[in-house]
Length: 298
Image 1 (cartoon, helix red, strand yellow):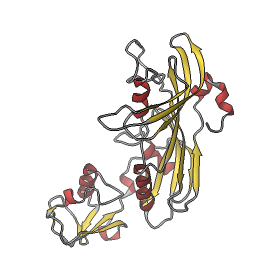
Image 2 (cartoon, one colour):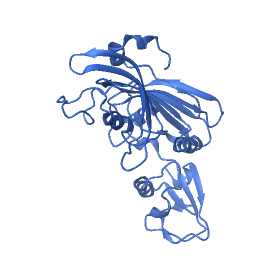
Image 3 (spheres, one colour):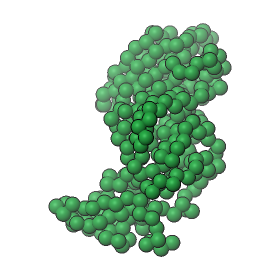
Image 4 (cartoon, one colour):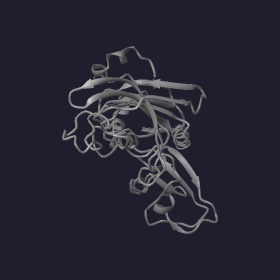
């Protein structure tokens, strides 16, 4: 495919007073489609970034006044898979899918949610359509539930800003072990950063191994890595099946993690419609707490 035949999906005008630096350094963070340092370097090597209309290189110097562009990647080279996904919502701008447990959201593996999107979602006809739909946030490998997907450059930018500004309300459900308070707030720092989670115990059953198993509704108010898993261990009620964050006396190797992203609530970044999308509870939750089958939300 010729470079001039490829579609430009993002433009950027370099300010005249910019400090002189190499393209691979300057371009980090200026494009919504690819923002990471590693991603930019790969994009340059693939010829996806142009400088004043010509293919850029990692050795190019940006001195000020240049016109940069991000080109649409040839989809033929993207590894895809046909993993079937449960689509909770979809329009031409975004989608919400129900991520299964035990699947990576993205990465170098072939079997990821990102690689399965093209075979599950309809193609957007918007002028700023992304070459491949992009997950806006992450769920851990063993966590299931609602995952927000952007189909266009504009939507990706808006949704990322909404997550950063806490404009997306996330609700999780988990099964925890041990005797537990009815409700509470956890504010212990994670990796030296302020963190806050709220929990509410909805039900409890006796357990031969753990004395009690609790059905808990969780609301994270910050977005630290493994926040809910770490916070619940902090109060002595780790999530059932967690191989990493468990009590010292628990000799189990872990199994299926009982953590589910139940719902996402946010204002549509294009239509301004108020959306609240629910991911059905996994069967493993329903086996322990059959009453969940009658719940719409908590």
